[in-house]
Amino acid sequence: MFFSLTGELAYTDNNTAAVDCNGVAYLCYVTLNTLKELGPIGSKVTLYTYLKVGEDVMDLYGFFEKEELDAFKMLISVSGVGPKAGLAILSELTPSQLYLAIASGDAKAITVAQGVGPKVAQRICLELHDKVGKLGGSAGGVTFAHAASVSTGKGEAPKAIAALVGLGYSQSEAAIAVGNCDPSLPASELIKQALKQLGR
Image (tube, rainbow, N blue to C red; front, top):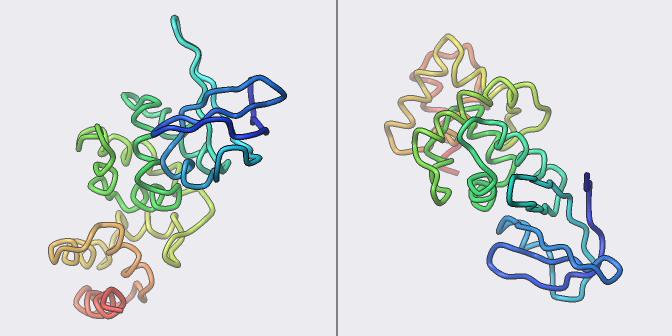
């Protein structure tokens, strides 16, 4: 129904922002990442929006970038993930960080969001893994598709990633580092080269 709102920023608090569009102010639930981008009260802003209509509610969600809105829609398509959890996740992770976490199976990175437990994070990784693998884009010089194949594929890469996770690196960090190495190398060499990158 609403694609975006453009107007004057009229109000903000910890999780909402109101945009005045020709005298009518629309209150949107927003992520912390969006709040950081909005600027001072009175500045001109555009928010990409998602309208949730329920039995007793009509809630509007606003995002500074369309990529963040797309990530939000993807998250709430997962069973058991509502708008509140979607906002919490995107308050902690940028869309690129989220996609990399999903592609590499890094559920732990998603649990940093308030109210998101390990089971929900695992479900997000499982249900969205293939979708994210088909997305263009990259993080840390590794495409999401490559991170997905490195983490779950055959060969030595998954072993190297598991070893790096055992050393205390996150699944996402390990997937990026191993993804930047020659996949034909044995696991021991992949670990050495990945550690050099991670030590920079």
